[in-house]
Amino acid sequence: MKAKSLKNLAELTPDGKDEPSSPPALEAEPLHRRLARLNRELTKATEELQSFNREWAKKNIEAQTCRLPISTPELTHAANKRRELALEIQRLQTELGSANKERRQLNAKASQEALPAEQTPLAIPPKRITNLKRCPLKEHREWTVYFELAARDELTPELYTQVERSAKSLLQHALETGIEEP
Image (cartoon, rainbow, N blue to C red):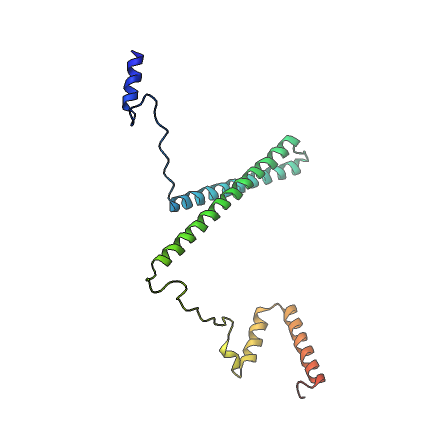
């Protein structure tokens, strides 16, 4: 009877042979799901490390208040646990980084494919580089007054006096060398 059940099992295989073929290939996890899973795992591992550190800090404080040393095996266990969690976090961050890199490459490829045929990446004129630090209001006659007010408000008093001393020194040097007239 067993031989008959094995034969029926062989008949159920896709190719009809006595031995089942190799297992079907697993489908790749979609990129967005992999990113979501990795983010969840990273959050979980980070929270686990933080809670472990909090618990260990409580235990350490209790040991200090009681003036009882923590045993060496407990210290070793804590160090190993921290190391394992840190390595897990590092592994997840590495996987997350590679998944993000793959996502950026796919986005770049998709944006290049979306370009019309006559507009290849080489045919796109280079963007004009603008100076992002440009401040047209610097030419305004009241600029220095407002700059000084902002510096006085934003900087610590010690740092503001240091900047003020540097400005005096620069002006004194400019007057001595004849760059500025008195």
